[in-house]
Length: 281
Image (tube, rainbow, N blue to C red; front, top):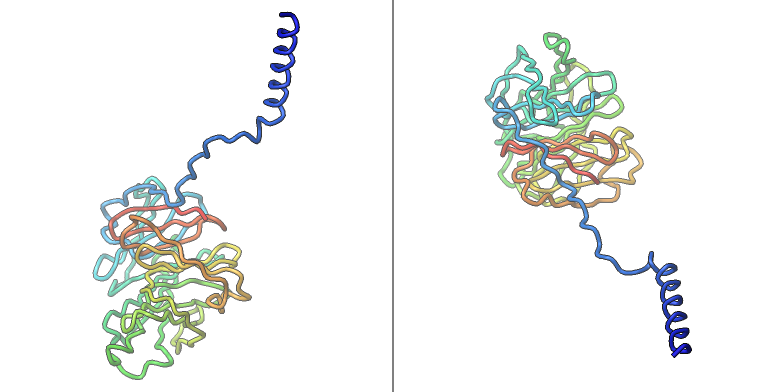
């Protein structure tokens, strides 16, 4: 009997030692991965159809605007979806499509919507939100557009996506003809009349609705309905489309229109459905 008790005691001791040393490798249920796409808030009622988006230096504050035919206003909102300020501009919103921002505090409004590919009055407005009456105008035409409009299959001169880099504005087309190719144009980010230079293209088979560049300029994100098209590993923002490409699906986000980087790993997105989202890479 005593022998059996000793054997049992040794067994319990060995089992205890094994549990102690192997406890970290024991299988435990994996924690659920956090969702990458987070709905932050509903947009305020004033933002009926958000089309462009830019993140401001103050964390959790953004600028957005409405699409064609709406009031020429910029709306400052926070991450709770509250309207912080309405910035009224003495301009016309024919078809505002996107926003960008440079490191000196200038905001660029893309008056570039061109559904029928027949506009000859394309512009980008440059201003500082704190001085909304002081507006510079960047007017341009596309170097390879010869007809207004071109044949339906060649209608790739609508732009709903821009970003700023190193003294230039880059414009990315929404291919309404073949829904196959996003062209990239470049114009100087200063007042004047220009011919937008075609610098490259990328086969995406998607209609691009927004664009953003990360603070380090090492990532460029294009947006289409329910998708982010992320580019990394490029030599220069001008040739971002030559970098490593990744498609990210945004489940249940709807018609996504505006995108901006908050930091290197975080983007904010707006949808025509009136929602504000945050996406973590």
